[in-house]
Length: 354
Image (cartoon, helix red, strand yellow):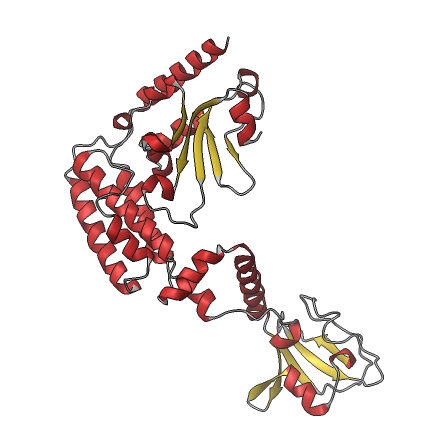
């Protein structure tokens, strides 16, 4: 099932433009994201594999089936609460039954964790981009050889250097495992090519063992730093996947402001903190950020140091915790009310469909 099929088969309850356009924080390069709610046709709903969520290929459009929508609303999921408070100019379709979902029936003290708690976790991750910018990974992938070392007195020498000094080839080396010493090997050498080499190919993930004639003497003892190699492979994969998938405009923005944190992510983190404070104070929130838009754009442009933003966030979170501690909001949405609402909306939706 695709978003387009939801639109054509009459399954939609609600559809809106979400993200930066709804927040009033869009710019020329902002994507147009959509969110919505749909009701499965009756046969599929009662079948073995009911669809809970539908996304497009790029995850720019996300639609939640009624039951999942209600489940996440009851948890005060920010993305789902935001749907209920979509600005009118962002609403593309609204079935009359959707008007039964009122923010006041769902907003509760759970928002402290779902909004402020999530924002705090994002603050801590915001500098994750720094490692990728400051420590790029070479496109030329290292091999097992680069993580092998031989004993040299009381120290160790990289195997590549050890071989280069002797004008030896790794393919003429032979390794024999040393018992009770994981990843340690006796290293033999035969220029006639009687051995299998240290690795079978440049893409090998393991050293290669050889059969060695009885009485042959090792030229050195080799250690394969398996842990470092495994970490490198993970970092290499993650870095180049990030390069291939990154939003280039967003990446260039991070380079330009020079603060080495994801400014867009940090901007939306503070947006969530401001929403959490509004909820604690008033029991509702405005999705479009007219009051704090200048402050949020300054974050987006990299006007603050990371440490300053962390300090401001910690102060804001302390305020939010105090406000929620004295809030008269319910602890959580009334589960019976949610159950009744979901039942009645589904019943009436199917009834109107015949």
